[in-house]
Amino acid sequence: METERRVYLDYSATTPVKDEVLTEMLPYFTQNFGNASSLYTIGLESKAAIDHAREQVAALIGASPKEIYFTGGGSESDNWVLESIANDMRNRGKGNHIITSRIEHHAVLYTCEFLEKNGYEVTYLDVDQEGFVSPEDLENAIREDTVLVSIMFVNNEIGTIEPIRELAEICHKHKVLFHTDAVQAIGNVPIDVKDLGIDLMSMSSHKIYGPKGEGALYCRKGVRLPSFIHGGAQENGKRAGTENLAGIVGFGKAAELAHENLDKHIAHCSELRDYLISRVTDEIDDVVVNGSLEHRHPGNANITFKYIEGESILLLLDAFGIYVSTGSACSSKSLEPSHVLSAIGLSHEIIHGTIRFTVGDMTTKEDIDYTVEKLKTVVARLRELSPVNAEKGWN
Ligand SMILES: *Cc1c(COP(=O)(O)O)cnc(C)c1O
Image (cartoon, rainbow, N blue to C red; front, side):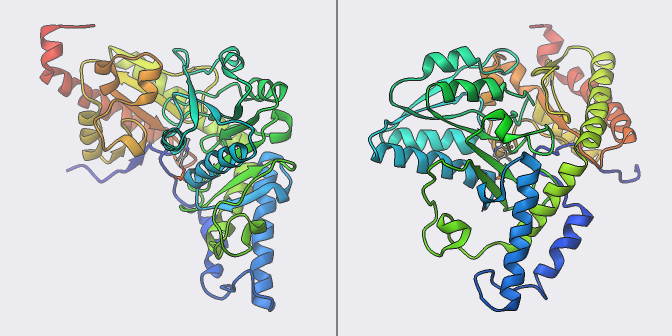
């Protein structure tokens, strides 16, 4: 038996909560438990803690604290924008057409499908082989009745960073609101919402070393944002419900750390990611790296191993204590081929041999060395067993 080594390479699925973040959170479960709406001292203290977290999240993206609304995560923020803005615009007779892309997270795609069932029209923009949305295609798709464009900042499967500034510029030219799902972007890419011209932006805490079940929506001052959860007056009357106090405090701290460490984080992750890619492509035959090599999430390596099944690779690596993903975590339970890999033009066979490795702050060079060694064993073993390979049926 080998000693039990654990190598977590799925930071795009979720991240561990950092010690500093947990330390900040803990008192808010016990001593500092006051309801932020209460008017006595411990209530006011909770309110002050939430205000501080709002400043920390705002600072990470160049927003004003008043433009930040805390939510229950990235999925809720996406649902809020798409449903509320669409509804409000239709009610005001502005139109019922939305534009998005084929490679969005399901939180956006399935919300769009829901809206289509309710009488909205949605255009799904194609992407090129590297996963880029074309600004020209966007401009051609905008109509008189277009009310919202939603294009993700960084793709969660292949790591491609979209041309957000150009896309937002086109929207403004045509007076259409621009939303971006930046769950994979915050803490991984420098972001200034004012400079980029973003109107609405979704964020999540648990992808940046904060707690799960917490997120935020940035809504530029001046954009009409209808309330999403009706009830109490929390979040400026737009998202009712007693705040997830410890979660918000943790997200705030995680955002502060992400802001302070951004350059170091990017350098650390991209160095290990590039090392992983170069060793895998040098030492294992018949592999393809998917997504853009130039405009890419610093921690993402999405690699296809021809002739074998990604699920088998995942399970054999798991036996060595190495944790990777075959696609996005949300769809990894289904055998449907990834909609992102389909959209960049990969054939079904190729899609099934694809693994997403994502490195993070705790990843070391030894982790990558161990992973590559085990990967070589696993891939060789599976290819020996592969009937497709035995027949040399395809290349
Ligand atoms: C993880 C993820 C989400 C969902 O965020 P939750 O906080 O888990 O709801 C949305 N969009 C993208 C791109 C993601 O990677």
